[in-house]
Image 1 (cartoon, rainbow, N blue to C red):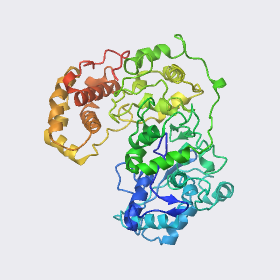
Image 2: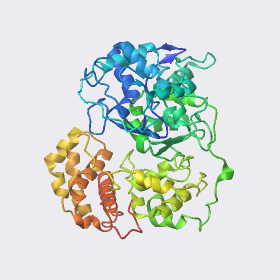
Image 3: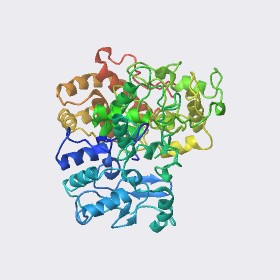
Image 4: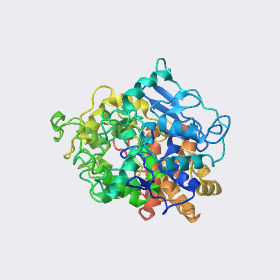
Length: 525
């Protein structure tokens, strides 16, 4: 929920004119439920970083405070072990918990109310089958008067109606199927509605885009400029499966959406993704801003132009077209042109790991002032024919404060998630090989280590190897004083890009990647 971007989470649930069509998948309710829970991306909000699966205590940052999510495992003391199916159904589809009473709309029961009885029972069967974890829910940080749950009656009266999904008799079977996916467990509008807390209602700015957890989930209506109207069905489906789109649709899923794709949408069957897209095509197109509100930036002396040429053009190119297969284009990039600038700001400040075969991005904003970041953000959102509203107020500084990533040096080093890759790194003593490494030795060292890692046959992707090497370097280098010049974000960004070059194109020996940072003016992204 909180960890989704651009197109929100999906699920598999076959509905043709209201009748679930599960025969082609599994008659076992536990297996069906597992698939539903996975495709609904329940783990995103109910698994804490480094925590046990679905054991809760993930911190949801809401406008009114921080909510700690509950334990969904069948533990009798701290989870759902003392729940009956009726108790679960009341929480899941009515927003009322036997333990705490009315639930905050951070839990999308306003969408889950549409889930069929059969699917709800399957989800319950799966949740009762997973290992029980005894983990007490931590206290939420919600100030008065929002901490008084009985006050939620007012919200419920205005915005919540308990109602099962009803197919449109005038729509095709595919569109009805997609409507069920998008509007119930998929809860796409939970991130992509403009007004989050009014729920799934006509007041919510339906699918027009909005801020979620410090990122911008953009317009997904069929509008030709601000939404997905200019995308082909194939491009949208491929984006949902991989995080990138083929052809002339530049852009890479980042932030929460990236995790939603990895954990959820990449596992959805293609016919269900197609159905979701078919339904979104029927939603009325919506503009979230007007062209007349934009500033003119298509000039050489435009604000941010010099900053772009200094920090960004070496990779994204002076014309904003990027490098095919390595660096995404900014010109024509739908995500870049979203109504809200949050996603662009978070990427500039926080960088990006290697993904979808593309190079990692240096957290270059850590070398800029907030004024420079504001100006360059306005520039890339309005140059080369792009059109998007300019920043106002403290949006840039707020994004800097909210950005916590390994590449920016504002979050702890990550962990290698792939067990076989971690075992290979331990066997090859990768961390020891990277400890105390001089910047001028990045290329020869990685040229030696990369073939050894690939020879281990771990079954992981090149992206995983690049990100694993970056993680290993972070663990041994973050506190090394030699990396203070020019800065730690610049050094780890350089290392990550050299690793990308060696993993993807070892024959080039990273000839085009600097072996050291030549100052803050020519980042090597």
